Amino acid sequence: MTNITLKVNRHQYSLDVLPWVSLLDALRDRLKLTGAKKGCDHGQCGACTVLCGGKRILSCMTLAVMKDGSEVTTIEGIANGDELHPLQKAFIEHDAFQCGYCTPGQICSAIGMLGEGKAHTRDEVKELMSGNLCRCGANVGIIDAIMEVREGGNRE
Image (tube, rainbow, N blue to C red; front, top):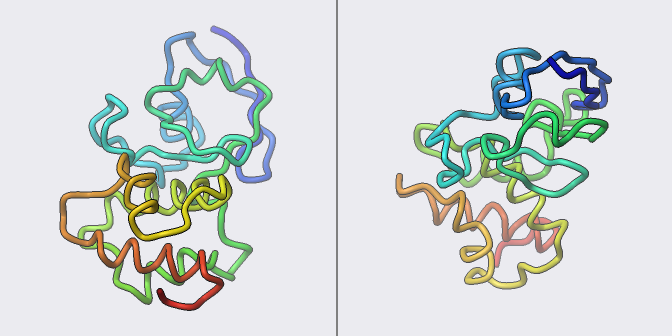
């Protein structure tokens, strides 16, 4: 066992983990934060996306020990108390989910992507979100929601 410290959603945690435990499993199994989903468990679907130091990462492909001392934000930590994050509001407004399983990863990825400052057009959003976009058919709503927040609340 290795002892690590993580700051998750503004709370400090000390965890004893085996070296091969993924960050996703540490979050879900040890901290009971089940917002990040285990989809493919191979880093292909993006359902497990969380923010680490403000950057989006695939938590299923990241060992928990690699993030010792890091600040992690999961979907449970992006709202400000009872006030939803603007992307959460936009996803609701644009019905940007069908089953909703992938939604936490999509929202975390979108927050990270917008922080990167690279997405300026719908095509760029689509390309930079390609690791998270689902095959369920909600992609138009997801891109609409991201563009609305990117433009400061105005739809493209």
